[in-house]
Image 1 (tube, rainbow, N blue to C red):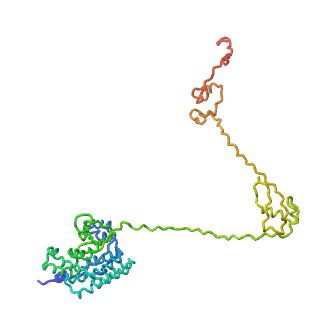
Image 2: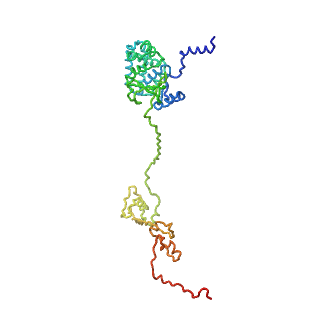
Image 3: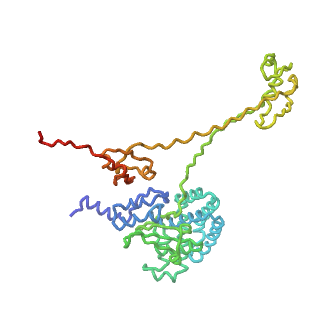
Length: 452
């Protein structure tokens, strides 16, 4: 039986499965994104992932995606190493790192067994980037642009990553006795390093993580914290810290910590939530009022011109040849107290000739105005109304400001309006007077009923 067209296509697909390489169009190092994007990405995934990704933004506000080309774990640790140096802002520490990494060339040659002529170019790219960070450390934003551009350049990024691989391989070979017993592959530690650690585009494993942390991060006090997004029980991601000494030590966002998010066969960088966000800027508006400026100038001196002879005819003015002698000086002299004796004020310097020098006539002081007495307060009026016992006002009952007139009708005497009635609030019993008994009934007629 011959194979059909569909069978050939299936065979071709099976043969090319292991050789398939996905098209990777994203940059090796992406920009910072809100961690809620991960929650949206897993919104329709397994319920375990949905629950864990929903709680992720409460701890980590942002993340930085790494290109999934097999180097994402190495690239994430390397980029986090440079980024943490920028965050600390210690130029002396950056310069000391340059010297330390350069001194590790002998370490790579002695323990790793690599020829310096093979790795010297890779080490140089790392040193050049550290120097660029040191020069731009005063401007953290410019320094971040520097390392982002370097890790997005294929040649520079691959050189730095391979330098990190050589450091991890040399450390594993130095500590061969501590890790070789955990290997399950044939050929021992040397074969493992050749197949997993030293080969490009192969993802980092547990041994590589421990080796890179011990040779690169631990000597300067950096901590690597990895949040594992897997199907393990729990509503939050499980977090592990490297080195092991940092597990029991509490960390804060200000500590040199590199946080990674591990999803199956992939690593991204995480950024913890800042516990003290900067205060919101306040918009303060200042309203300024314009104050007009006035220029005050002195008045020109007064000069009298013309004929003022008619003023001498007015009563109280002098009949001297100088018509304004009394008027001008009298108007410019200060007013004294009405009770003080009159004294002539000295003539000022500007009141010289042609004004006269005759003595001033005394002016009668104005009589003081008697203060008007305030009007008396109005008298409180009473209401000549008759109130029943159900509408008595307390002020009238207590003050006894009204009295009911005395009526002599029998209807009034038997009502509560009568003060002699016991229901009256101002009850006063009548006094017995014998003279009131001199009442003679009218004489009766002697004529009987029915008489004829």
